[in-house]
Length: 319
Image 1: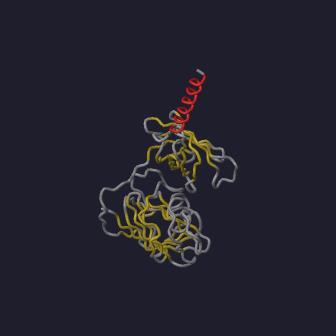
Image 2: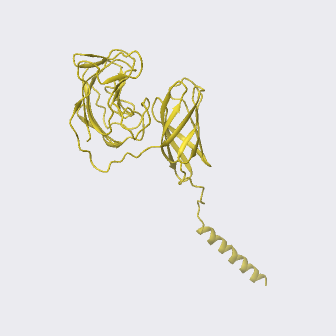
Image 3: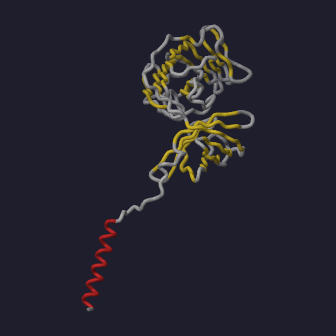
C-alpha cells in the first residue's frame, strides 16, 4: 500500500515538472499595442499672449511601455521616457530644455472622438490649454510634375515678403536679402505644398539662422564649420534628421542648399553634396508658424539668432 502511495506521489511530481517545463516562462503582460494614443499628433497651444504650434509622438516600446517625443513652441524634439495612458487619459513629464529651472514640464490630456485636449504646465510654471488632432501622413500617390522656377526674391526690395513681428530689420541691397542684426523672421506671402528650393546664404562667425519649409520644418543654417554632423547643426532638419556629412564652409563664404520636399520626404543637398536623401520628416520643428501640416505653407527665413544674408532664392513648385 505504501509503495502504491509513493509511486502515485512520484507520478504527480513528474506531471508537475513537465507542466512547468511547458509553461510560458514570460507570462503575458497587459499590452498597449492597440492604445489609440499611439501615433503623431499636431497640437495647438493657447499660451494666452499667443497661439503656438506643438507636436507629440507616442510609440510602443516592447509590449506595455509607451514612450515618445515632444516638440514645444521652441527648441528641438525631446524624448519622453514614459507616457501614461489609461481610460482615455494621457500624461507625461519631461525636463526643461532651454528654461533655466529645475521644474519639469507636465502634459495632461484627454482623447475624445479622435481629438486631444488638455493642459500643459510649462517649466516656467505657466499653465496653458491645448487641442490636438492626428497628424496627416502626407503620402503622395504619384511623383510630382514640376512647374517653372519662380524667383522668391527680386534682388531689389522685400516685395513678396513680410516680417513676423514689428520692427522689421530685413533689407535688400545689391541682390542680397540681409538681416544685419537679430530681430524679426521674414516670410513669403506665397504658400506652397511640394517644391524644390534653391537658396544661397552667408553668415559671420558664430551666427545662426534657418530655412523653414512650409513654415514648419527648419533646415538649420549655422556656423558649424569643422564639427561633426548632428540634427541640430548645419544642414539638419532641426532635432529630427542628421546629415550624413558636415558640409558647412567657413563663416563669411557664400553657401547653398538645394532642398526637395514632397509630402514628408525631404532631400537636402548642402554645398553640392546630398546629405539627407528622401527621409521622412516626423513633424514640425521648434519655431514653426503653425501645426497645420496638411495645408500649404510659406518659406520662412530665421532672423532672430544673429546676422545673416540670403540671395538667389528660387522655388520650383509641383503642379
